[in-house]
Image (tube, rainbow, N blue to C red; front, side):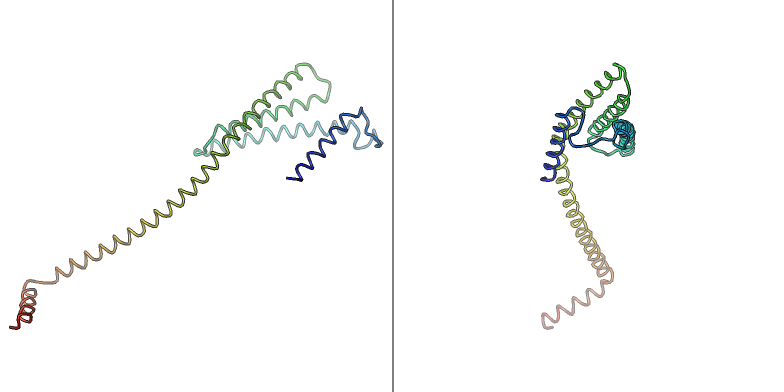
Length: 200
């Protein structure tokens, strides 16, 4: 957390220095022909903007493929918001790449419109995430609860199967015992037991 704050302070100080100075950095001798000349910096930014635009356009394609491939994704509309946000960011970088050379009013108007759209979509996505993250955390808790319940039910089903097998085994034994005894044996055993009991 403190590293993030220190980084933000450093960036803000750098921005203040850049804004307050005219065109030169104090105490720095700039070589117009060297690597860090204005021309090379502008060329580097141009190439970077076009490469960032390509990356921004490839990420939504991968997300759309993922959305289409998986049918059971919850909150597909949030993924669609991310796709729109990323595409609009890519458009701003793509259009910004053409502003390094002399450009027309239409290009600046298109860039402004895409920046406004990017602002709207990014704010909407941020607000959606603020409301969605607690729901996702509840889903995680619910998933763990359901896993525990499923484990308990599996254990109970296993115990019921064992009881059913034991009961089936007892029924089979009882049936075998009844089947093996014939009437003559039952009468003979009963007579012997009665005579022993009655002392006959």
